[in-house]
Image (cartoon, rainbow, N blue to C red; front, side, top):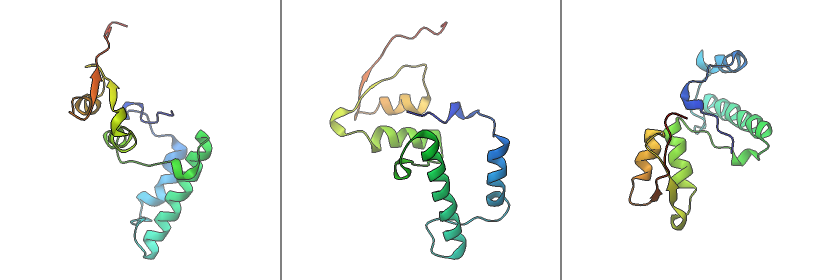
Length: 118
């Protein structure tokens, strides 16, 4: 597993900012659209998907971009976990979105002890 969120506090790498600038300054479009701006956005997203896949040793179709950590948590837990295997070890010291998911009746929850001084 390659965790890329870093609790949503990772500073933006200057190279990433530079790569994003064209899309922040006007070259944007809905990658699901058939018009030119949308198709250009789609090509950029797919190029980024290939770059990330190569970086982490994955296949491009296996790289899924999400809009937030909570969306990624929901996808990982509800979208990719078979119903019969929904058991989670979650503590009160974790991410609130994960704790809320673990409290769902769809999940069996184990509560490991937490040492907050560690």
